[in-house]
Image (tube, rainbow over all chains, first blue to last red; front, top):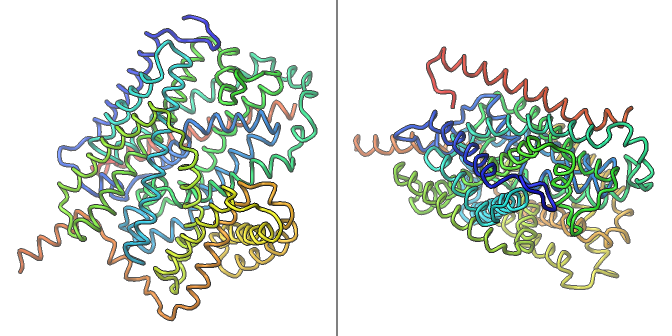
Length: 555
Length: 40
């Protein structure tokens, strides 16, 4: 071991940990390997995954490397309520999407992607909006996770950033390539077990090594009034509300979550999402406590970089074995998300690009598998290259966030309301993204009448978010009542206030505008959609292929 | 006291979740062996 700004593992220890982790994961994936993989198994594990595996996979996927850093940063910046404003809202969104997930499964039990349902519901343009947003989102996520691997390895060992990126890229690809989603789910379980064990040991150890209850009692003075309050307005407006809105979009717009939704046994959707909610919340809030503890100790982040908080706490208060555990914790979190991204990308390319478009609904399963595996290789290559070049992806990230925010209402409405058509879907999304961009990048000065217009749109957006959450659990009437009440309360509050919070204003504008346009255009539509046709339009690929062959033989 | 509890409750809940997941995985494994079908 050698000591620098952070306590470092030796190169041998770091390599042994990485090889041990990825080697064990690869061996685990061999347990389920089949010579001839079934296409539906490769994409959604034949929609028959049990409770334990699917819950673990949901938690492991939802937690990525940034979860720890962001939660700790939130604890450090906003004090007592900080970790809650990251972890609690993230967890709540898992719970929030399960009623909609049940509806998706009820409409199209054999679906592989959400975009596939949109193809059956509206056609190619809506499908492609969803698919492209999924592809860009997963590529970004892949790159961010590989970047996190490089940063961690270079911070806690003498290995370089590029070496860390390469090892993570090759490691994740090695165990995901052959069995796809099945391997992702299987290895997620083991990775989550390692992550929870590490968290359960690390958090109390750091807490007591830092001084425990005595430290808290002696240093409460370090927290200002906002930080010492569980009801901090600053924490809600700067962290809680924007994150709540963003993560809702992520829950609906991301294929990694949809894929697990389509994979779990239909009767287990509710308990799976419930335990995933609790598990995600406990782990992420728990690690956020390290940021709060850092605030109590008076820690100064090195170079002012908040992402260093956890690593500094770990270096300062953990023995070498603890640091190795932390190393595995972060590698496990980023790998489980990266393998989910690879599985998601392959699912979208196999289903939405090849299956529904290139093959015109008559896919060849073997060629389909080739497309899936080729996608994984190319995506890993791109992820590694972009991570190595350390591209600034903020603008792209903001756009994907906007796109996901804009599609939430049209996607949900398309699955419940028979008047929504392709035109309403496409125009509502495009206009919402355009107006989001106007606010987010301040293409015009957000002041005067312009600001009032956007604040009104944002108030509608806020009402839509609350209305949708109510709708999932309590139905249309309750949702309309909550939405109307929320609008009445938020409208006067928003005017003159939200212009000071551009991130929140722009996110809520995306929700508000997409909803208003979608509703307006749908009300003008006189045609009605028959939802029962979705189940016949969206079917299993492998069975579908057999049926096609059968038709040919019979013919 | 409550602040210490606030810090340490989360790893405790995580541990409970882990136990639930392990027990259910074990049950799934047994069911899969009985039925002769793959678990995933």
